[in-house]
Length: 109
Image 1 (cartoon, one colour):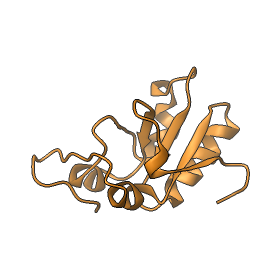
Image 2: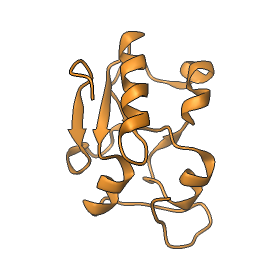
Image 3: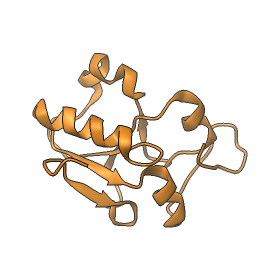
Image 4: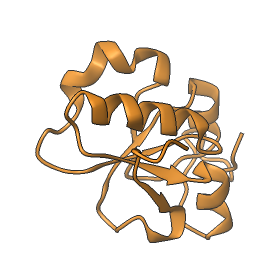
């Protein structure tokens, strides 16, 4: 990832952090952090009004690529954005909590 984008390990994301999931709808439905806010990457530009301006935003995707691009764009526009390195794959591997909208066992799609 670009050096100007701060990154954090999934295991180190603070509890209660403002977590933005930029994955697609099918990925979100399969499994996501319970406290995350879902705005697919393609909609992010039109929905920035939903983002807090007074706190850090931790951005997550499946593996860290899309979230890195989103964090870089948000940082360039004045938000304090941090990429979650390794994305949901690392989140699941770290044993962080996940939920699925269907009520089924959550997984990383």
